[in-house]
Length: 492
Image (tube, rainbow, N blue to C red; front, top):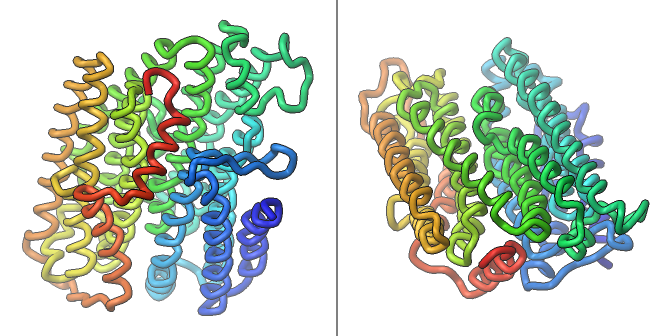
């Protein structure tokens, strides 16, 4: 039965993409939505075992889903559904405006489904080599989505993303090979020598020199996909030029998938070398990302690039929390991963609505959105408040947990610096958000009253993020603890 669910998870988006490639109009939308719906049901069904604290194994161990994998798989399905729900309205507007050719519509949905297919593969495979293949596939497919409008800026961003992403993931491949080499003296040419579960079982006996090199290359490679500074330069361009539903996927789950891969390497390194080596590197790069993102948030003039640099900031915080370890920081990381993904996806979708309405991505041009676009403008303003961590946002709770957890783990200076940088980043976001909401609407901008469906799609995810700042349901609390156990390699 597990094998059947895995087959459905893989085949539904792949076959759906083939079916819609040459289609257009409502037929393409319907088939894409059905394909994604089947994929999401299969993903959540497979994840249910891991979310309850078990491990699902299929295809003789090729597929292995623990609590961490199940959590990322569920998050991928949820954000993909949010992005797909926003796609028809976005694509219709672009077609009407002449920004997309009619024949591109089917290709958009096909690439979207294949992007999701590569994303759901990441958290379900046990083999680190197959994990690398899945991450590389996300790069290739999403790069085509970034450049789908074929404007000079989009093509430049797509090529930059493809080249830097491929080079970065090339370093991750070297890290994967070194992880394999570190086990050869124990496992020989065994078929499971690159399986994460096998490496964790023998981690203390792995070659320490090769294991250190493996983590360094994995950090450089997957750190590029995550958008960690100084490997981040592709991210603002790609996220700002991609269609907004694609930006939601990129920022919501694609960089989270790369973080998942890096965490797997960190767990092996920490189990084999002790926590200090990999944790120190994670803390250093996390703080660097927080610090470098700040001035770009302050001086930003592009609404989508503002959100992209915010992603760099939040991924830096997540990496920092993983480096801190300890039960409180890790719980903060786990919940923050989901809340950031949902909030950022909603923000990119609402930003896309505003960009289409105002005909510009410049923050100096997008003003008075509460009056001219109550749904999208209100969602953007609420999302900025939640993303910045103002109570009752659940992100306030997770940021507080990571900072305090870092202090409790003995990283007082790093946690204090992170707290200051987070506060300044919120001030920058609040400044831009307030001007966008209450400034004077430029002349010539029509008032758009969104339908109830779009308003609900924007409001419900943000309400959930706010609610989780006040109350954590018992099933979710149990899931967070199951995931924390997977991550608890040093004092967790």
